[in-house]
Image (cartoon, rainbow, N blue to C red):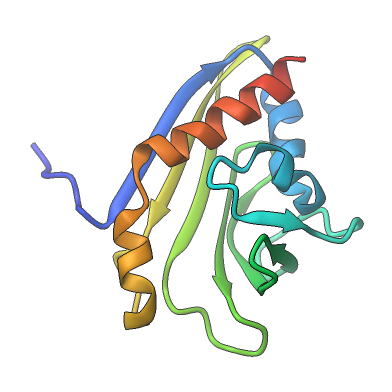
Length: 149
């Protein structure tokens, strides 16, 4: 049995919507503030829909900060993960991941993960360690409400 890492936080839920609909809400950054359970995302310009690894999308945070998010994992309709950083900086090593697994034609198991096991920026450690599965679950639940409506 594998011991869970204290640096990886996960939440999941079965959502009564197909994976394609859910994925469209995640892969379009302009829609992310609508379901962000951390209340950290303010806005993202339209037209940044992610389609492959290597793309970068820009997000404005509620505190006014700007983040460049480098897509490092991608499978259309199934998987997307990105590494945020301040503009022009290398990512400090924390990753946000969404995995979608169809259960049947009308429901999908959604798993949301925050992995800060590679985080190198000591200024971000306190906030990273304070990120809980409840906050991730809030994002999953808000996403579910949107996808199911």
